[in-house]
Image (cartoon, rainbow, N blue to C red; front, side, top):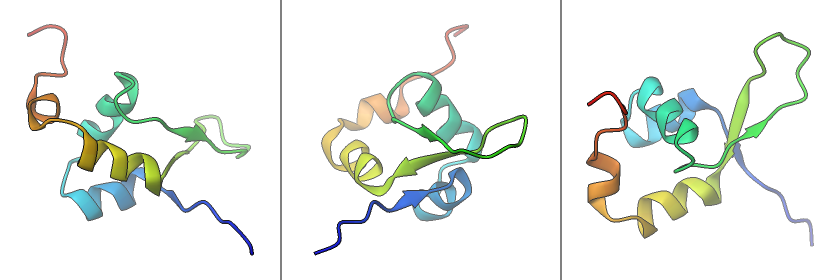
Length: 74
């Protein structure tokens, strides 16, 4: 049996959830969504999020966390 992790790009997460890419990046920066850098040779490494991590966030986190201000300036 082969176990395969499904990795999603930020764009794919935005399409699935309806969240903006900026909001998704803020979730990652605030450690609310765990991301994995790729082994790309680009200067800005693209990151991926495991489908299971996204599911945990959506299913297991109270709504107020998703809607709380993520900007520390507020």
